[in-house]
Image 1 (spheres, rainbow, N blue to C red):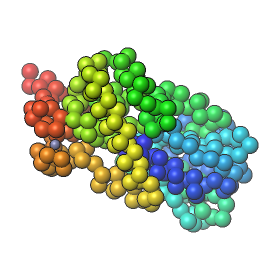
Image 2: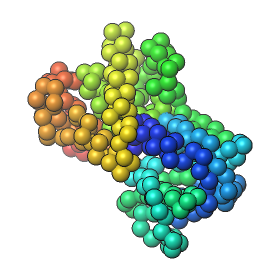
Image 3: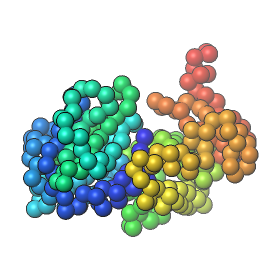
Image 4: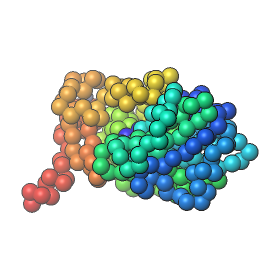
Length: 288
Ligand SMILES: [Zn+2]
């Protein structure tokens, strides 16, 4: 799933490729990809792109003269594919991974695609990004200039739950998902099950530094990487996430996995939990 760094890199890419260009056709192709009906996607046609913004993991393509915006959330298996020349034949709806095609002037354009059978990629055509419920709910952006340690401390102070769940809660902090929450906790040398309310000021400081440095480094790595190579670039930079059974690059211990919420998390016992493996709660519940 693309998270803050990858979406930021896509935003960069689209900013370079879309601003000043005109939408010729906007064609939703997958069933239920479009979450809004007024204005229709055709309201974008003939409009010039003024700016491309990011809100958490959402991309927001704004058109000039306060025209409608094309907002998208790529979800778990969605991606954006740039096309230097869009095929002339109209695509057939409902076939394959193609969710939406946008055709620009000069025959260029982009496709939003989604692999797999679970279709979660969402597109909204709105006047104001705050009309998108997922954007209206977002917490602060952790890379914003004003996201300082005092703000982070205040956010955590009101919470009493496991760090893993808190970090990937979009309404608390925008843009961090399953992969980067694992990476941030590994960099901070903290158990994913540690409670937010139990952090000492020194630990809060360490977590804040890990959050900012992990995301900043990932954004730097992704910047300038072609859209098609971003996923591989993300994978190559991860230290624990998705690396179950492999050695921790910091200490050499074996990276372990435990179930969490609707998926699983990865961590290094030596770096994060005093050498003790975490109990898999789902598994132990089954064995009772
Ligand atoms: Zn380690």
